[in-house]
Image (cartoon, rainbow, N blue to C red; front, top):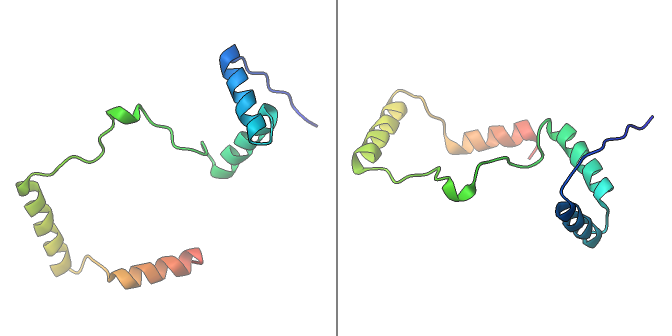
Length: 99
């Protein structure tokens, strides 16, 4: 059995999406079906959802004090044995994920 989904969209959006999907060799209905299939496969949106990219600044410059504090923290982790060899970690990931 097949279900029907009805969605109201702006006429201009519909026109632009119809043209885009036609240029890509498909149609809007098939594109929506692909989106739903991928959403189920990803168990979420099959793309990143975020606020206005221009406003985002995930990385800010660190002050010299912050950098030195992070380096000290890293040295302490090494001295306490709270780190692993990078080659060992990469090897474990390859084995775990079949890479």
